[in-house]
Amino acid sequence: MTDLAAVKAALKTQAVETPSWAYGNSGTRFKVFAQEGVPRNPQEKLDDAAKVHEFTGVAPTVALHIPWDKVEDYSALAKHAEDRGVKLGTINSNTFQDDAYKLGSVCHPEAAVRRKAVDHLLECVDVMDATGSADLKLWFADGTNYPGQDDIRARQDRLSEALAEVYGRLGDGQRMLLEYKFFEPAFYTTDVPDWGTAYAHCLKLGPKAQVVVDTGHHAPGTNIEFIVATLLREGKLGGFDFNSRFYADDDLMVGSADPFQLFRIMYEVVRGGGLDAEVAFMLDQCHNIEAKIPAIIRSVMNVQEATAKALLVDRSALSAAQAAGDVLEANSVLMDAYNTDVRPLLREVREEMGLDPEPLKAYRACGWAEKIVAERVGGEQAGWGA
Ligand SMILES: [Mn+2]
Image 1 (spheres, rainbow, N blue to C red):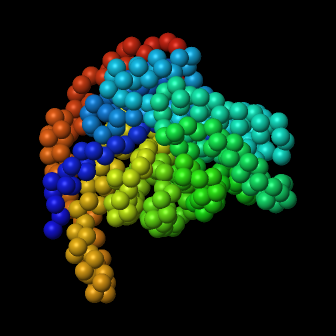
Image 2: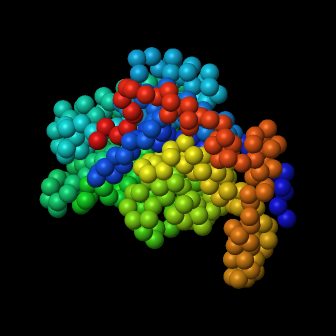
Image 3: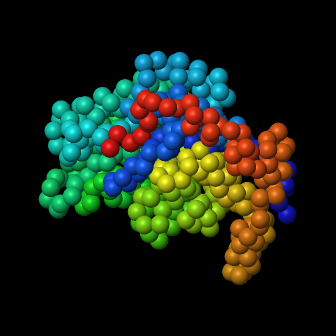
């Protein structure tokens, strides 16, 4: 039997970090469709993120992206967030939008370009010092498009050197989270293509370096829960970038394409003690055609639902079936939890937290969407620099 009080307690303390860029305009390489009421600056992104937290109760931090969220005074930005009930979270670097990075950033063949990239990463740590952020998230678009274009091994050496310099700059309580992605924008080799490469670099760097699993950054059919189990077992799972994919790195709402996969991932998190460890649960999504704030609320709820189902797995019954070699029973125990409708449980959890049990309905009724459309007129909407 599962302890319902413990399940509820775990759900109430779960924290899902929302990304500042998800509130801005986004699109594909074909078109960015502007939406009315979209934030025009980092402060307005935080205002929207505060609404997500207000109605879900479990989205207390907001990830920033430098330079998209560059401001003069980061302490003032942190205060702006705190005044609205949220905090600044992970700092995401950007070494993929400058002309200099055509052949890579920290792995570029020219030392001057690598220097520019590393200086940007060090600047991101300065930002962390000012905002009080604990995590620096690194994703590199580095790679090659053609066999022979550059030396695969030399690029790993350059990567290693750059990471070591940034790692050395981290303060107490700060972490470096290294994200991997198997292809795109590079099509032949990617310099951090998989969890093994990220893990090898993090292991060499030390305890402050951990791996980020972006759920959309795997080849079709990849068993992501196995990767999660392995990284947690090694103490190297730093966090997640949650999103869904059908074909490539689609950045759709987490849990929308494959809710069963999200459940299997969250089961391994629960099984491996990841809810209590310092695993950052972040969204990394783009809402190209749907309304942004409700989509982010929906995504947070999808993470909650998968977590609730994972917590409901009767682990003693599962262990007993596994030990007895009872294949069907073991599978049934897991599927029973997955097939449970956890929405009534989550409504109860929200009521106990003093929230409206239906976050999406409550958000729609609160008038914020109409208010931002009316007020955010003029200026330049936030969005991809691309
Ligand atoms: Mn990501």
